[in-house]
Length: 79
Image (cartoon, rainbow, N blue to C red):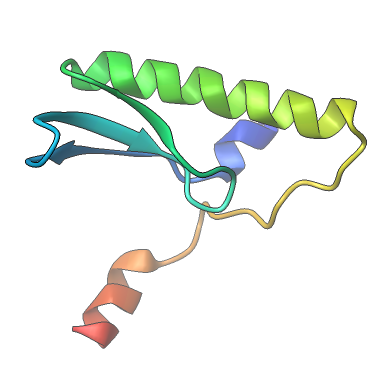
């Protein structure tokens, strides 16, 4: 498994922007957007890879991983 798989990647439709928005919470702010969900996800994965490469080049520790956490049950507890 590579480091990129340790971070949750989210692609969701935005009614406000009328396009798909891709983000990777906990790793970087912002993300990417577009009208094709699969292309947005592919671009998001590239951004995650590039971000992790920058962390490694700068010898910075990676942020805490976000994959493998049970976000769905946590959201049910809040609701």
